Length: 447
Image (cartoon, rainbow, N blue to C red; front, side, top):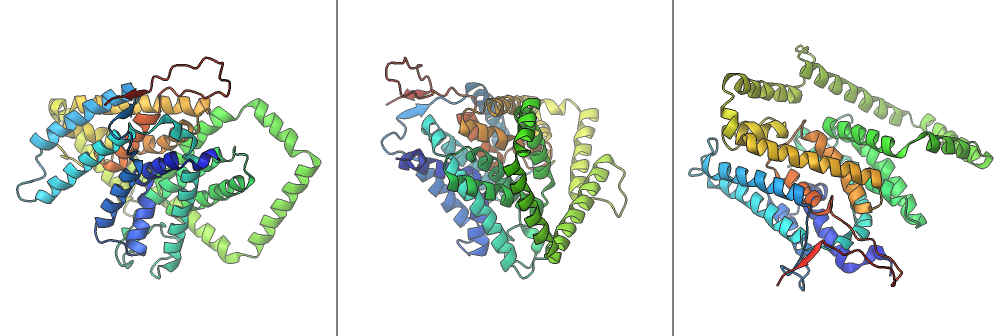
């Protein structure tokens, strides 16, 4: 039986995928196909993902050891946050708006349940996850293109996204989840190219190209910055003088030169007959360069009325508030000013001003340890799951400084997966029954 179709492990990773990477498909089914109202479909999807992770015979009986350094730091951070959430909460008046309390409490409960279920998923899932990620990231990109094509209010040049509501307000979507989906599509498909199956290789190559197109269409600056950052890491670990030399030798073989010439002639002919396509590419290029330049000028404080970027300006103003507290009342940063005191769109600093120095240090060190383990996984490249998670985390590492909030499930579902699978010891299986096997220290059975 092909290892990519083991039912149990494929089902479990599909559940994991729905929880921590399923937002693009959930948005599409909610907003375009009309499944569920409000957050109903999101909750149902989350429950479905958690249910798929369950192995009835092993539920709460078999647990696998997570990476303890990040697990301990995450526990300290969440403990401090929960204290602030319950006792030091100057913004949310839960007595007058209990829905806010229920929403936040549900988020933390979801994170807890997800992590407990993750600890019951075998390490062997590493051999079965890749086709799921490649296929569903491709499907997420297809859903985005379909929603753009069927939205009469969409204007070429806008940031591509599945639009919320009736589609009349085209800026109401969330392009970042689709950019992140495309980011995952590029690197999962690259890993899948090592598969011997020709059809999977072709499909993976198509997904890489398609995902890069979606990255450009979404114009999500933080994700693009993360993509180039990750690409630099990829080149550092995978490109050497020897590989470049071998590549040039391979390129200058007669048959390869012929194939390259045919390929580029075909591309040149196609582009020459697609004036509208060239115009669209130029439009997106100009739009991106203008908005990126505005963001840099705004962050540097040299913008004017015509070049201001309001998204970047929000972060500048928030950083100004943090700097004011740091310089005028620094003692308030010891315990923090309270849960969700200041939305900064800079998670690494927001956790400090809200919940104090202990939360900041635990959160910062947790991400630093995950970052180091991600680099190690990328460098080694021996385990497809940890290699993919290493690349995928780099996107989130960049956004720690550029967007989001440190309490959100969008971050913590990903952190849970990193803590469970990144940095642990994986036992390599061997077909030799007489070779002594290394003791597997990861599973621990309790009854």
